[in-house]
Length: 421
Image 1 (cartoon, rainbow, N blue to C red):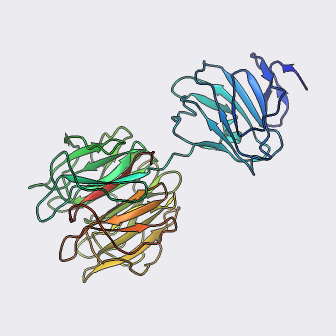
Image 2 (cartoon, rainbow, N blue to C red):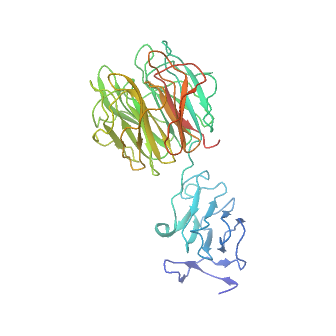
Image 3 (spheres, rainbow, N blue to C red):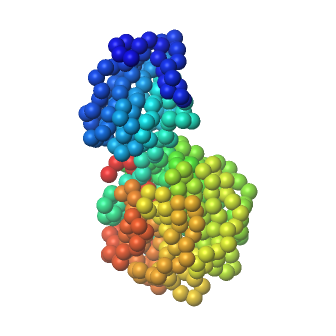
């Protein structure tokens, strides 16, 4: 076929089907590394020599149609990247990455509305799920030096901890933190002179907002993790007694009321996210004895029952992500001594056996991911408060101590934030 072909879309079998709108096939095959496309056109994309970034129109109307086709069956070697140019793609903002990496693929895009944006026709066959960009920076906040403090330390995308910044909100210890909304953070609960139920949101520039009265049981020494890629969950801790209740946080930072406990009630627990579709895991803690049990969190925020302990049971450990979709728990107190051992978590949530300690054994520290695929443990206490960090590389290897920056303290919290370096 050549020239203008009316009423043309590609079906599963590659045959031509009719549609009410005409579609003009651009006769020149695209071989460049970038191309800007227009509604009403079909394009042959040849990636034999390079990856191609395809920029969609900056404005669109319902029913606008664009078809792109793998001309030389080479997208599996050199992918295409779709830049939705400020508009949504399958309901996801333009900050998400949309790639097609299957040779012989064809993508038929229809614009719906401002909410869902561009939607691939035959989504179950041709559309890869957008990949959320990872957070690049981290934020450590609050804690105790012997007295509770309200301060923060920002971490850049290279893992460098900045000097103290006076915090906003109630000084407290024993709180927890997690990312939410993809690129923001939330600190919640803890203890001032008494247990509190409040939160402080941090925006994608690392600015912490004033106190907001929380929802749910006031408690301390709890854990938190992301789930579903853009939401968070706080769980476990201690009130007048140990508890296993959880509180979900939506992608706007709203904390929901208590969800009944699943799993063994305990405190001094750690939590971290893992997996490409947004699962989480709580691990360890103190029940009257030091435990290594874990509880998985689904990508819809459902906490599963106890998983048999792997590795040394301990309290006061911390967890962070690494390698894009895996996690690591490290350090803590095992009932007889502080330790620096770590346990890797696979991208399916399987906790591995102990890895020998690297760095100063300590507990009540915090950890967070940074740089998209790395992590760090920082601060904590042994017999004294510490200001140090241990970086975690993309393979989950923990580096030796680096003297930290900022006030030595423990019982603080940390989370990732910001899509930009």
